[in-house]
Image 1: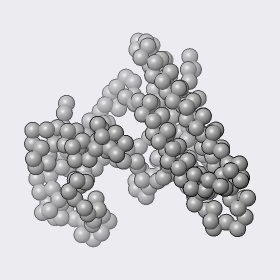
Image 2: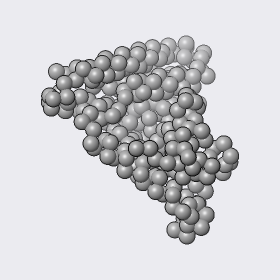
Image 3: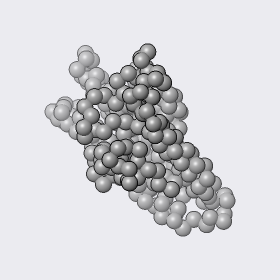
Image 4: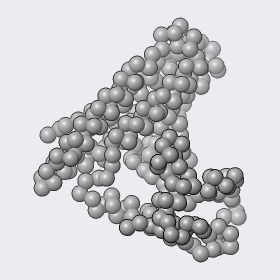
Length: 264
């Protein structure tokens, strides 16, 4: 069932259509934007600490015309029911729309015999994240060569994950839905995939954040190590830490690929 758009001018369109028109993805303009989860909110302990797949649904501004921040009065004394009723959503249609989307997601996840998740999308995100962090590192090209810092292991792990994701979905398409053990096994693989990226030791200087792939930024362990280079007295130790973080990231991606491999 489609959810109707609550926006003026989009009365005959679905929420998806208005979302795509107002806020297309910067990576693929045929899809609406879905931002990465940040940090500092209620999902943080589940997502960053425990590796439990999480999401957040909210109504936000029209990026094409609205130049202010998403929600200027967030966590202020002015964030009241009256503010919403008088200015933000007098008809409460946007509140209803968010509730419908959240309820629909919960229903689909709980009622589907197989979790409706697509690992190839995850593989593409990993590829983009790896390219992003490598571009950051290339700002230190001379040092990368001097200290023999290589991202080959991480790129190889991402390729392995993409291959494992393709094979996994091929097996998924051939799954005997009348075999409850096989169905449960595949669902477990999908459900526990996120936890493969957890490093029990946490990030350097941020032990609460156990998730090595994303903690507000892509591959945060590598990013933090690169960021700290200028402030560390011994460049050899600084670049040794970069190499260590690359190896941890590569290991966790390989572990995630292993989660998707056949177990029956």
